[in-house]
Image 1 (cartoon, rainbow over the protein chains, first blue to last red):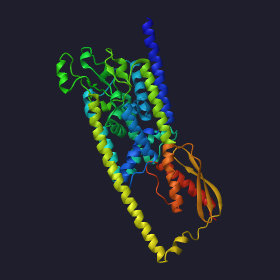
Image 2: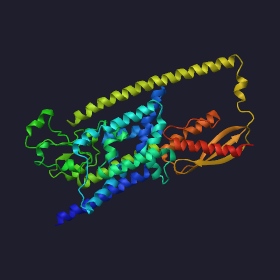
Image 3: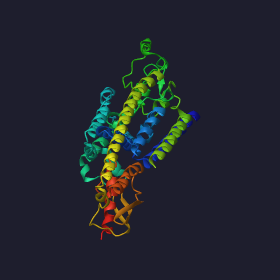
Image 4: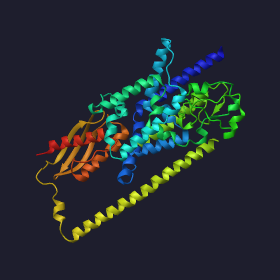
Length: 302
Length: 151
């Protein structure tokens, strides 16, 4: 009984801490994600005109966020991105509503996610190609981010942005039904983050031979449906554990948002990294990484 | 295993960084060479004695009254207010009085148009790509201030 109460207390505190961290980033750095991508767009358009790339604030934010991602993984996507937070809030609302009406959650299958994830690379390449060919003004017209940031600044979207408004509405509906739809399948900045190397102490990994039979808890709670890599064996090693079925799901850890949900929910305590932990230590790391990121963004922006 | 994953993508990243670095070095070199050519042309022009007059009297006719003028225009989140100081028909200084509704990084980038306006002595300058709303706001605010300064 006492044990249960402790777990419940922790869950409440953990929820509160995460809401505070994400809320602060949402209101203090609402445009960090689009600034970083503007840095990439700027660099590409400079390259197309043969001029040197200057270190303007956008480029600085891009470099800063990429360096942070190499150190700590995609914590930015997991906790600091305003668009990701917006999507998660929509999804949480829809989960609660569906629970009330006892509706089964509709979701994309894990297999379809394996294909859809390439959408974000296509998006990134297409948008950067537009910049390369000097058609950057098109992006301004169709960008759902511009619409979102206008709404965040409490003003109505621009008239020239009507296509963007429709795309934004469509994305909002999709994000109601599928966790992190935009981030996993369409976000051009996410595509750049996903190819970044992550410093080994911040990578998640596990020893599959210690997993419980057919347990799929980690893949069920993962917002990106990732099959966590077995970091204890080499490529041939997996054949030695026939009693554990191969998990369907993304095996690229580049898709990991470093949210830590799998670490918290693993019944075998089998998923580990130095900077992503369970219980209060994990919460402490979330706050520490948030503070580092906030200081970094502050100095790059102002 | 973790180290292996890290190293493989690190190599990819280093290749990209290397390529961008090479590009950057080449582009800086090219920009410097162009600058030198432009300066040499200027020197030749000055030596031959022509052009010095034409360079001096750029703006004719449209005269501004000396003084400081405030102008405002819509930016991204709200109004941007600037103060333009005019002396001897020259835009001497542009101060941002209020841009509190603009986002930090966007405002910092958009401030580049102030220098372009001062360099060109004209509001007919390119907006900052990526920060179009904010830089257009600054340009329009300067225009509205200059309207007040016009005789």
